[in-house]
Amino acid sequence: MADETELKFTRNDFKRVREMIYQRVGISLSDSKTHMAYARLSKRVRSRGLRSFSDYLDLLQSSEESDEWQGFINALTTNLTSFFRESHHFDILREHARARRKPGETFRVWSAASSTGEEPYSIAITLLELWREAGGGTFQLLASDIDTNVLQQAAHGIYARERAEKVSGAQLQRYFDKGVGRNEGLIRLKRQVREAVSFFQFNLVAPSWPDIGRFDAIFCRNVMIYFDKPTQAGILSRMAACLRPDGLLMLGHSENITHLTDAYAGCGRTTYRLAYPDGGEEGG
Ligand SMILES: C[S@@+](CC[C@H](N)C(=O)[O-])C[C@H]1O[C@@H](n2cnc3c(N)ncnc32)[C@H](O)[C@@H]1O
Image 1: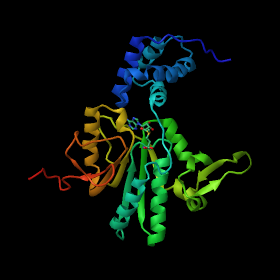
Image 2: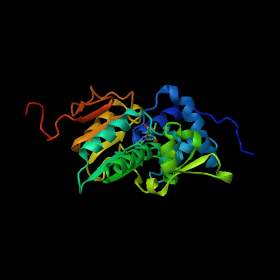
Image 3: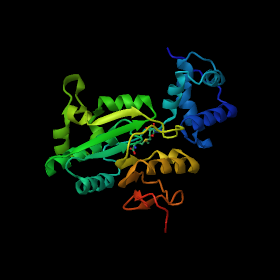
Image 4: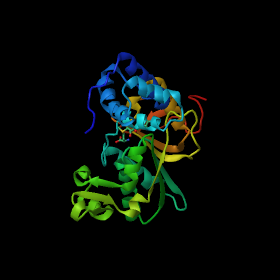
């Protein structure tokens, strides 16, 4: 039987957790997250056979390379997502792709906090549908997250049927397989959709970003809310360099960037484009 005895979690333990997660992935934990941190990390402390939080935090701090760092990060991320969440972005994406579609050119999209995959698969379905209706085209879709658990789930592309409430009947029919027997109640993206998305681990606050090219659209939704303003500003500035001149940046419904940077101009509901697509400054 699992040992569920209460572990001591002092103010200092929480302060250490807060500093460590901020340093690694930029997540800012307010005091109101103390209970959440305790609930999620106590499982990690026990799974390592340790008796206290301070032993657990010492273990992490004793080695930058400890494989427990990933467990610590995975425990503290919040991965809530759904298919066609904030659905206006998929309408905007469809129209943007329709207008940008050029023979011989690959339309490129990056889902930069892709969680369990619902967001990039919704993008893939949108583009596959458009390509089908418009008579062909090619796209490349990258999807990244810091959390290795969600990346693994995303790559499998298997979900409970009720997770797909915003997926139309026709889309379900065309792009998903329905589980039978002991898989009753589950759905799985068809191979064509799964293979349309390349998942990889990527830390938005890494000291340097690998060159992943420029994109026609970047979805960076509902992740900035976990970061403080300077971190948000740094990410936005790097993302500007990853957009094609007429590329679009989609943010989550509560992510307002107007006071953080003048690199973008609003062009639709929580949708932005580069304010200076040729790299010039205002009036310059
Ligand atoms: C709430 S989910 C958003 C999922 C999806 N974009 C959506 O809007 O439905 C936030 C995701 O951001 C990821 N995340 C948090 N910090 C990150 C970082 N520094 N780099 C990359 N991803 C991060 C989390 O692991 C989590 O899966």
